[in-house]
Image (cartoon, rainbow, N blue to C red; front, side, top):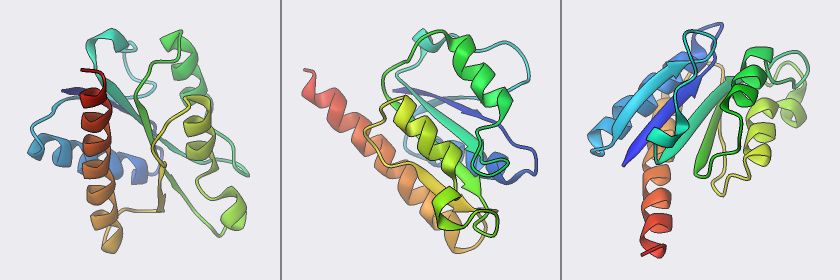
Length: 148
């Protein structure tokens, strides 16, 4: 099983989530490649069984331009996409909280609920990231088992 973790981060919060996701996937025996969106060429999605894409939410619920560019550069909608995001409820409340993650999950028709983290994944939210990641692995394994 191989996963691409692609993420965009300005403040470091989404990067921290990506690092916890990576550590958890590695402990689950998954091959992992991490790509920071906006740095270097877009990885070839055909090399991976699944992608986890992470984004912060910007400007009243918007998806950052670099994330939109990354999605466009992939050139197609791969299957098995899982989404995580960071946000801040003090800007837009619950309606816009992690709205970029919600929009990405909808766009990719993800069959697994996106992970939403308030600002930094430290403290009790770290456990939430780990549990979500383990759930993603189980979800992917279940889908994979159904195909054979």
